[in-house]
Amino acid sequence: MSFDVDVSVRRAGRDIAVQFASDARVVALFGASGVGKTSTLEMIAGLLQPDRGHITIAGKTLFDKEAGINLLPEQRACGYVFQDGRLFPHLTVRDNLLYGWKLAPEHRRSLALDVAVGFLGIEHLLHRMPRTLSGGEAQRVAIGRTLLAGPRFLLMDEPLSSLDASRRDGIMRLIERIRDELSIPIIYVSHDRAEVERLAGCVIELD
Amino acid sequence: MDFLSADEWAVVALSLKVSGVAIMLVLPVSFAIAWVLERTRLPGKIFLDALVHLPLVLPPVVTGWGLLLLFGNNGPAGRFLADMLGITLMFRWTGAALAAGVMALPLMVRAIRLSLEGIDQRFEVAARTLGASRWKTFRSITLPLAMPGVLAALVLGFARSIGEFGATITFVSNVPEETRTLPLAIYTALQVPGGESTVTRLALVSIALSLAALVASEWLVRRGRQGESGHVL
Image (tube, rainbow over all chains, first blue to last red; front, side, top):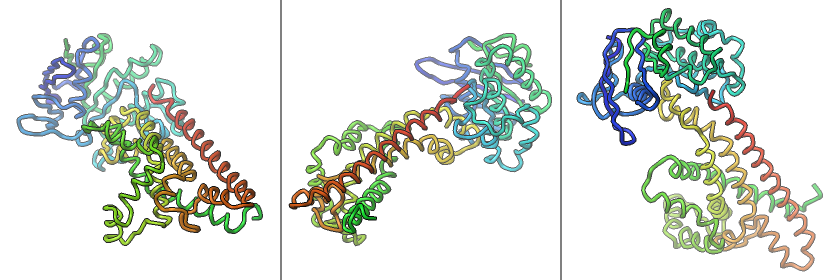
């Protein structure tokens, strides 16, 4: 089982409960804004502690309230691709890409910098600063930074939402290649049904 | 150098030493206080905030008197330093550095706190998900992003220390070659008939140092702002 998630949390006076188990390579969390999609990803990444439940991904338990397991974010090896890229503004593209790679243990460094850079088509950006990149370029670099950190699974939080239509297709094709060629389990969050249907083998609708 | 006499150069050198030591000693304290005020939910934070800012609004003589009570030969902190570490502050340049540091503290805390406030904490979250521990995140993300504010704090603190007078003269008196920094030397020269030329020269040095510090501080703040554009997509 790739994903076995059953958690709930009370946040800002509202209960958010999510439960799903799936073997699909891509699970999509689908729903309108404010239903708790990002909170769910934050619980999986260890950035928000659930009130109850458990999270097991690719055979590893990340959180189990009853068993007293709650791994720190840096121990979970989750590749979180944020809606807004979040490239570190004081580092070059190259240093951004290598940030997680340098921290990863040897056995998780499955991707080399030149391979990742070729895969993403960002060779020409390596010495640029993040503020000089377009939205699409920045999102490619953000995805590359995440892949190079050797994640056991990916969390993608509406990675296309801040891009214009012409850039979206390029990033979408890139995500499809990650799904097909790198075989990393992905939880993909979106409020766009077409995106979700194109990518995911399993769609969880939140309301 | 003909512009200043040897004695006047000694005053400038002493001032630079006192201010340099003061801000280097106060920097980690300022950072820690700024961090507590900006990033923690410590109960009673408002009182810590008020206490830190007290030297900014109190008459400096009162701050000096407070230092005298605390760090004087009979003060609890003064006795501790003398007994445990063999450090005496009274009538010494080290005491002048302490007075200058205390007076610079509020400005330094403010500058660092502003820069911490300006850091988008989403970068720190991103670093954690990429495998960085809290400490690594602090060193590799928070500290570099706060650096323009830290440098601005150093420059402002230095400028404040160079100009420090009231707390210093109250706490460690006006001892030549020991606690007689630029403002105290100017004050002393003003009391002496024919001291006007010394006053003018030392005043010009003070103005030059203060102006340079303010320009450097403004430049650092602007540079910091430029670095912030490009946070997100």
